Image (cartoon, rainbow, N blue to C red; front, side):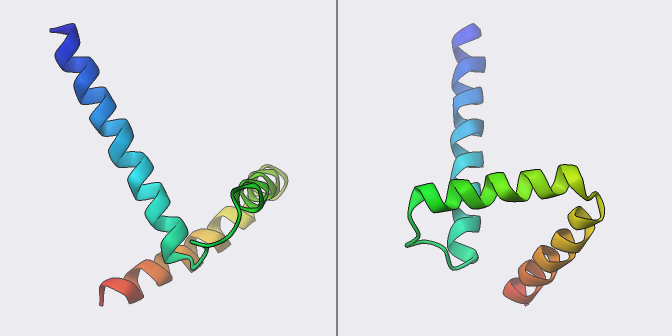
Amino acid sequence: MARTSTSAARKKDTREKIELGGLIVKAGLRFEKRAMLLGALIEIADRLREDPSERARLTAIGAEALSNESG
């Protein structure tokens, strides 16, 4: 039983990582260096902690990009 739940957790984790990688591709950042991507994500995390309104602004940008893609 524990083996089944471990396998399910691994599959879920793998799917989440693939989806997150897909966001990098959708943003047009596929060929950027990993260090730059990580730095950008750390910078965004800092901004979100400093300015809660930044979350809404970035969410709106992302939602629009995702809706344009599926349409």
